[in-house]
Amino acid sequence: MPVANPRHPREDDPRFQRSLKALHVALLELVDAQPVEEISITALVQAAGVTRPTFYQHFADIPDAARRVALARLDEAFPIPEPFPEQLEITAPTIVGHVAEVALPVIEHLHGHRSFYLRVLDGAGNAAFFEEIVSFLSGRFLPDAFELAARRQAARKSDLMAVMAGGAMWLMVRWLRHDRPTETAGEMAQRIAAVAATMVAAPERETPDETRS
Image (cartoon, rainbow, N blue to C red):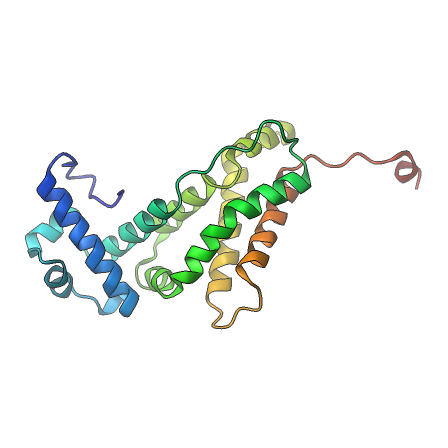
């Protein structure tokens, strides 16, 4: 669970891990119920059954805790997927199918916990948090395919992945903010997959008739 404060690396301490887990569970419940800015450290430690000094062993403040817990929730829900199958050619149709398959459960999870993630974004979001989310998405959207595309297009793999993940995040957040979205999670996954295919797939060769036209 990647929410512990790196200044206090006590992963082998059972008491440290128990208090971290208690804070994690309590904060999930609190943010599910109310905005981040309305949650106090006092309320959180009471809900978690720990002390205030224990809270500061793990987090700097409530926004820091909310960001870490949100990233942990994402990370726990979605391990890094299997790599793009080597036997499949990197073409637009294969990428659309693969990315849509990977993206759909992420989008469904975000929609299922829509209030939680929007509250963290609105009440605790900062540049570092957005970078962490982009990094999370980058690790799940065809990193091996981006490696090949980068070599073919003389671009940096990290740049391609950051643009793809950042754009996907923007599309998903905008979709989540609609109380009644006009698109289903499956349709949103297809949109993101289509963008990935446009960025990564090799351009189709023109037919002789097309080159003469």
